[in-house]
Length: 523
Image (cartoon, rainbow, N blue to C red; front, side, top):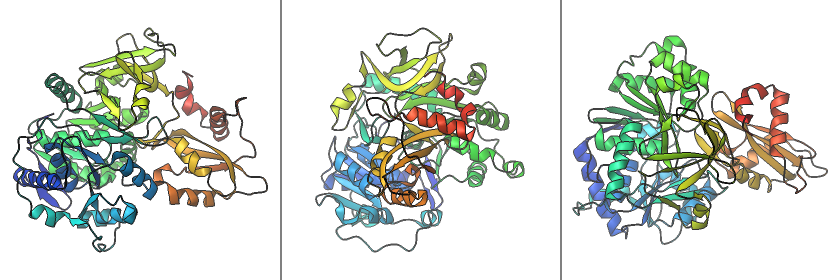
């Protein structure tokens, strides 16, 4: 990654543009302001912001100080947000006004809060009403920036943001890295150049939420290297195409769900836009159905690239269109600086073609810990490598193929969802004795959630009422689309619910079993 003070791109949003000089000035002023609020090297700055210029400015400002930006998932409900804020213990919270309403007076009393007015395009995109009144005790972002001097100290090597992931536990964990060494900085630049493909003169589009790891990395790399970065408030298929034409976009980041929605557009709408400027489309965030990927390659040509990785590991593999066609279903070969091993449960390395847990290490990335949870991090260590929790195999040419996930993680629309969290909330729902939540294949989102609920004796459960209960406690994407009642849930002798049996029964009953064969093959 280029240094914290190196910025090249003009940033465009639906509310206007900020050139390189304007962005640099805002970032240096914000850094001075954060320092005045007590932020120093190694501290955290929480960002409760949608895709907006202040998100990028605040991230750059934190990096100027050697501090960690902590993007918060703004889909979270109050208790979910408060948990992450309390866990990260930031010195400062920077939040859009309406999102600040969600957490309100429950914030820690010693937390400095900077309030960002919601610009018109975001208000329109998210159907937000008139601006709320200023919250007591908060600082206005624009007024706060205006009165700051410029931060002039030489910036350190910037640390990565602390991204919270729910990949292996019901409660999110913050993935925190040390700043890279000089050797890692060089190796990391080589790896990111190969995977993200962004360089001088490129024009980059990001419409996925910046609180996710991949779009966050993609956008931060763009502001340091590209000519333009266009940030959309949310993904809309036709607007996405119109934006590519308007700005002559060369590089975009996407998740498979976006591909599904783009391909679902009427062919006449798709042909309406000139996409000839596109040279590099990168996707991640979950498995892409083969037919969908084939459709994108047929439409846009062999410019569809993929990487596999995680918040913990960073990018592990990279795959071009031609490689994907030649090695059907692969997610690519190891990226520069990456070692991948397939191991059985005893930790023995397996030969090509044999499925086992994917254990890997991106040596171009500084090692990570889970913020405040070193024991959870230690559980993943496998010698010099780190367990991913995914199951896959390497073919004879070293291309990685994914089969399944060892853990109960569900990925829907590129977002990690952990069923145990939902099951914990269901346990508090009136009339619920027990529940199991699992994922099933979905053509648009990759997977969708199903909850099977066992009612308490004498209770008749209304699925709509259960869904309403969940919606009050959880972000919308965590609320299962289907909620079924069953008098008795199948269990192991230990009492553990046999979730796989429930899932198999559901797939068989709905005729979806055939679409899940590849997922089940290795288990």
